[in-house]
Image (tube, one colour):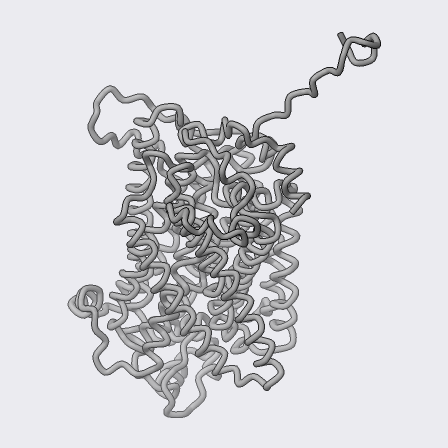
Length: 567
């Protein structure tokens, strides 16, 4: 009987059931690039390793690996070779391996729960810290976006032989990003193939520079596997710190945990989840190996060509090419302070104009690919943290506007040296955001209520925590050094100190939450922890993680909204 025709005395009617929260209630059908299409996993009778299955899982890892090849990383590579020759290649290798460890945890979270990292944060953190987390990750995405815009603008500037000014290149990135993002209308596999093409372009272009420059293969191998930096000064140490900060990016963990949802994995069967975890890890390892090789190409080229080379030496090489801007290298005996633009000019003066243009094509591919994956990362974080979804063009316009306005002003009113010099500041900003990705990832993947039999073992817990501590300590040192180099006034320094205190307090909040997620329930004895740190949904989580995102038994959208409003 309907409520409109109910007779008096029939008694109160029960309220309509509130839908249980799951991945589909969080997202609208147009929310992600894989919403309308998921890749089916073939059924293989053999129990051994299947390359056919690996091909079905191939895609997310390569999209994730693009963040290891963005213009900020490329510039960090060439500076590493210029400052320390091949001696920091082992740092690059170590950072890539450590990055793989964290990406593995991120992918496992998405596979086991069916929820990506931002969606899990929405369920596990209270409203205020959740919003702070979102803002911090947005800052990281925008900082990375600015590096990509700068790199793309420099590539266009080189390719046009200065015909298109830097500010023109900055504006072009708005149009081309919208254009390329429409590619996902042609299907998920075609989009992934396009990203693979861009990675191939980077491999071919930077590989060409490597073959042309002919660095010492023995020194390259020695630099990779001998963890020492003999004769290195403080500049080399700072460069090593910069490598770690540039390679491991916070928003990439959010991105990877969402990308793995593009595969149709049956999460009701633990064997299927175990298979997916294995193949996603193998694919990520292959993808990061490819990115590492490309990074090595860049380091080796400039280690061979620019290490301990003076501005005057390079300037004299450029005399033979009147069309090249040799004035970028002043006629003095100072060592070259390399960046993306100077690197291209050096290659053109040393190996011919074709080398400069090929370098620019590689930088353009790096900028375009990382721009698109960064946009997807922003879309995932916004819809996850805020439980809302914008049309993709609005999302692109929002992040592009924030990134392009300061970059455009700098490009229009300043010189190219100022534009490329922003890289260190942006790396420092992104380094500060790293705990806001690593700590939640470790917390959720170490929580048996979320991961069940796929929860982190002691080795994973210890390794990931040590990794986080080391990387955060390294990045803190990098940020402090960058602040010292800026020579701030006392009032600006005071502001930085206040921000630093708030930053440490919030990190402590995340660490306490992580400790409880890992099983330290003694902390729940304190009322302050129960009231302000643990989310109201914590005690009601399902202990069946295979169906976690489908049936969080008592956790409904209505009750959660009430709890959050009360908070």
